[in-house]
Image (cartoon, rainbow over all chains, first blue to last red; front, side, top):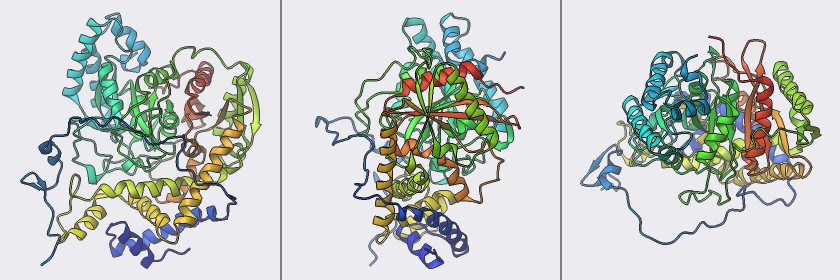
Length: 96
Length: 484
């Protein structure tokens, strides 16, 4: 594949990452090399092999439904860039 | 000899015989950190006060408990992606630059309960993505053997701190070689345990199906001691495995007689530096002389391991790192007007270039149209690789291999060529893909006086066997000690 600037823009949009116009060219170059190398994988004969989701036979890890101690809300909010009235503060979500 | 050069085992015995106190020992290490860190850049946070407090607590434990842990009172440090309650944990990223975790990782809780003395947090490649510890907001870690060279990565600070005697041991994380490669670059021992052997609770996630925490130590015995302390089932990690732990220290010196060691032809026929090849082969010959049975084996799918690894790890990273949104914790850009811009600009400014490349690669591999032919295909190749290993382990006990194709390269030498950097991981990523344990042990110096490492891999939960083989190598080559 050739990763052009438009494609990088689209992928960056899906990943919710802003990439400046001045950086698009160099990211496209890197990604061409990286994805180009990884595409070798398409030609490997994997027959009817099932995808490997776990390396060990791990099943649902159940535990008793016992209430435990929760984190303190104010403690958690200390790491928030902006907080108010015990809530995380964000910019306007629904525009009027 | 400076006391900081001693191994965990030696220090434990000094503490027990009251030849030194825990506080005095912590002060010695803190002095060493203050003296050497400006030139090595291994630490990003030093806990002067915390270390002394922990040392006092450890001394009480030593005084009151006959059976205190061997790690009681021993100064150590943690990679900065292991959460430490109340102590900054940054992942060497702008996006977590001021993050103070409200909880501790299980490994740290276990060590704290054992009386460990945390000296500080260690530099690394941002979010553990990289093999040189150059992708960090704190500047590159420098190799104690030659400060113009990298310490390896991503656990470069973990390796350099131990090699430069700024910590008795450290913990790192290994997703595709991030404990083993820096350990080999810095001439120390590093282990990636079996997937699920050590709890990942509190390890900031990069690629959850590959990540494992592992020890970096001065010698193989210390590695066994630390493994004994951090291994075990943890209900807070749903992929943790409820299999009883071995005593890794017991019989570590029982030798390699009749141990069947396989050499994968795909590894030994691939490109590597002549000195690396010679030192690794010479270590294998010495094991043979001690009674090990050496056989050539074939793991044909290994040649696809780097492609499969980067597709899977990047895909998982793109999903794991979606949580950094500039709202609940972490960096928030002041430039955003609305919420969608807030996500995008905060992430654009908060993540470094290598992390963005991985997120973009992963997002691409998971996006509609490419998901089956890249991501799912990589999972199938992963199964082929794991199958190759299971097959060879029917006839041999462990696999021996180099750790990395070259010794520590120069700072700046590879940073502009991400693909070249990725291809260097050829010998390490397969253990993570297959979920098996792997150990890196120093086996000599190259022509420039830089350390070379040999790697052993084994079946799931065969850590004990790997340590036995590593111990035998160490008996031959001795601990690598950099001349002052």
